[in-house]
Length: 148
Length: 285
Image (cartoon, rainbow over all chains, first blue to last red):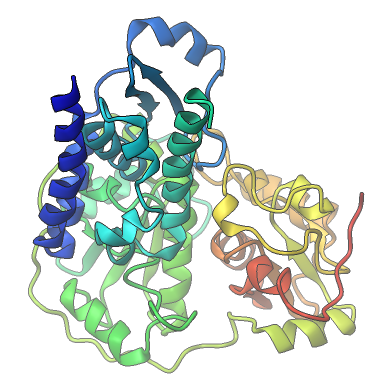
């Protein structure tokens, strides 16, 4: 378990490096691939989603997200419309990078992540703020779960 | 295919686009809120022009220079005499915004595909996940910006002080001052909530049907002429929203579906006015 956490920590660093080596076009293509790969929302959350629970209102897209800490590891589950691939892709990237991470590592993710990934340049300023809100939401849910 | 009747010479149906998308003198342009939507699937022949990363200057809050606009068009295979057909997501907000920007630089032949992506999808047409087609470079000379369709801050201040017509196309909650931003769009917030004193409230969404197509001329006349009291032959009318995209939708409706020659889009909109020091604001709460 500890090993997995440290892998997760490295996964975000790896992604930053990968994005750094890509031009704007390929960063967007990679984000779209992440959008394709977002795991389906587990069955156990679907009834609550259909009832409108856990909607991320800070985001302009219909996003439902559950962030939990189970056995000392962060778990993120989300449902995002396929008509919003940018938001879907970013959430999927965060799931890939942070699922299974230690809470402290999630809380340590800097608010400048989007700049570090080169996505501010790729997406433009207006789109970025909604994505910031998602990262912020994940961190505050983790903080709450660990009693921060 | 589409139940839409043609309401304006600038509005074409999905059928029309299907028939003409391979014409040499026609270029289909997709403009979306979501930057990746085009990459995920688009009309095969369409090119992408993004309202933010392509049409706006990334440093100064303004549009591209005339020369950069000309370069952008040429790179998309658009020449001065090309008929450009815009479509997109979100009821064609950004398609109308892109059309407005093209009109700003004097592009003559601009059309909107009525209903945008939604209508195309409802009509069972394909979106293809393919690279953007590469057309031979166009030959483009942009004109100086046409400020008869764009309102700036100082002009809006004078306009307001003179009690001339303005139309606020945001949601009722934004207009009254109850909401600091459009519901679900916190990134477009401002320091003050409310509206420009004297502006009439007509939410942009009243102009569209459920499928994203525009309402009929008679329905639009009822809303904008009879209810909002706008006058085709009167003084200039200024339309605004938050960042100028919803108001370019209404600008399109007034100018091209109802034949107003006297309407301008204030693209600074509430994200400028609601943050300005010392300008008047009215609330209804």
